[in-house]
Length: 273
Ligand SMILES: Cc1ncc(COP(=O)(O)O)c(C=O)c1O
Image (cartoon, rainbow, N blue to C red; front, top):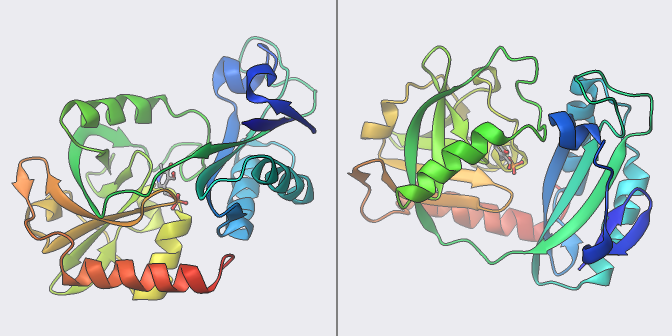
């Protein structure tokens, strides 16, 4: 596997960043995960736009989209994969040991990993920890993901693949790496961005392509929704067949199955929607 590090392609074994990189010392960085299909990135323009929004939110200089596109092409050409996960990491660069950022150039790493297609349905849990919709970094895709690591480990410990958070005012928010949708009276709903969730690329496409509505939802909705599904770059649209102790037999239900179909068709028609 070849990895792009600050302008050069390296073998994975010798790809290195400084131990003083602010991304490493304090999690001062932003990232994107982009799906690649037969070596071609999906929705790269939207991902690059979000990377810029996240970088601006942290006060990092705008990332160079042309350089990232070149890096993406270089790593995908170096390792042909049927289905991949392109990881773009952009950090504060070499900095002092505290929270102050240095004056050095930002760091850029572009790496590719292989993934297998996710199952059509999965189990999720809810966790007692909150997303802070008023955080300085709410809605930014930063590399400070330790809360997600903890919550996801709990999910795995309970035989689930995702953990869902509410926010500080008790509204349903999102998963550790996915957005959540529910079906109520046959209509699809997802929490609004004001809930503090990430503006998922897959979420936005699912809203556009299915007509899902953005609605403030209480976590209790998970106890009675007719159907539940997740969206993310690596899941596309994925049905939920269990949430905590509640089974949803027959998942994907009809509304989710249609959303999955529509997503596959539209995504297949246009690699950069
Ligand atoms: C916290 C969080 N929410 C939602 C998502 C889903 O976003 P996307 O559809 O852009 O992958 C992600 C992405 O991995 C995420 O990290």
